[in-house]
Length: 119
Image (cartoon, rainbow, N blue to C red; front, top):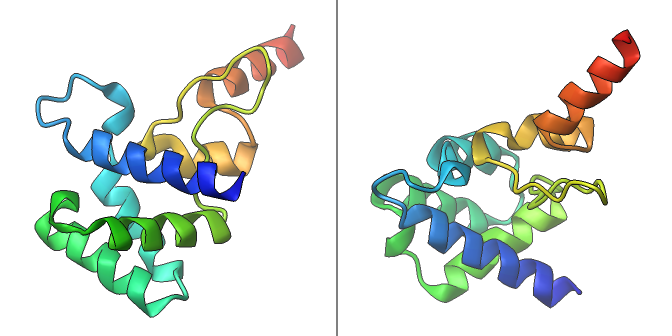
């Protein structure tokens, strides 16, 4: 399971970083998110790799560097790929990642939950 999670994060980083034309809405905020979370990393290699990604782009990283970042994101619980609600499974945008981690669900599920509470 650990290997699969790391592979998922690495593939997402690569895919979203390659979205130059913005056709994938889930890629929004990737670099800003890296800027925000890398300060909480404890592994020096992950910190250096994140700084390099921010400055030079994710494509400048080796596979090993991407894995280091992915492990650090997983260990620090700063990544949630999909909404954990079984009825949803929405991919979490990078720009919504902090809120999704805090709320433990995507913004749409938060909206639905709030709507139900008000009804």
